[in-house]
Length: 142
Ligand code: HEM
Image (cartoon, rainbow, N blue to C red; front, side, top):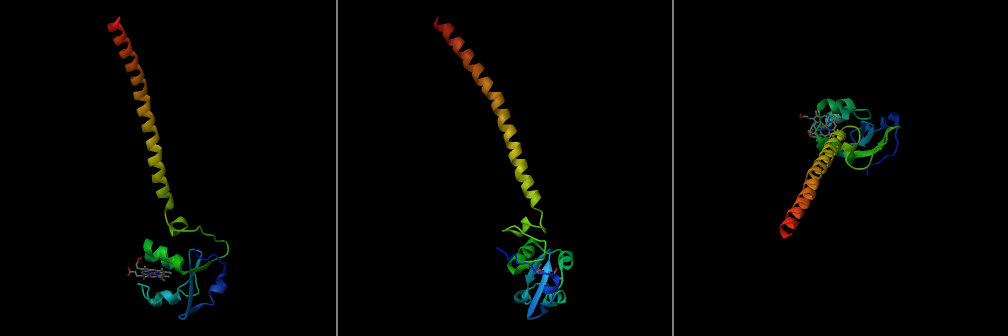
């Protein structure tokens, strides 16, 4: 689980060098020192945002979901007032988890009435069919 220790922005601001580079994205305090060289957008942009809240810059680029999930890897804490659920970053603030929940819900919701309609139609038909078959057969026998 990503670290949930609480840091203030002024604490984050003390880590703004290339050798010790923290920044904040969406309330998550990230230590990106080891990521500087790997960042596809280059280390300069990260160093420019070092010690600061880079949420706007991060979002303005339109980072991919993969990039958003990478945030978890570098999280060392959170800003005061922020808490995040365990697991996928899509469960917290950047993502659109509600869509997934909705589609799952809609599928389940659709299934039940269809199943119920099926039963409502066939059960009485089966009962009536059995009854008339019984009547028909007993007539022939008598
Ligand atoms: C820990 C924080 C960050 C992570 C994990 C991260 C990750 C990535 C990744 C994976 C990409 C490749 C494209 C994509 O998958 O979206 C990328 C591209 C880029 N990022 Fe970041 N990024 C971070 C922070 C930032 C910040 C704070 C800025 C700006 C101040 C920034 C600017 C860029 C730029 C300019 C590109 C290149 C976009 C392009 O070439 O189209 N990134 N980043």
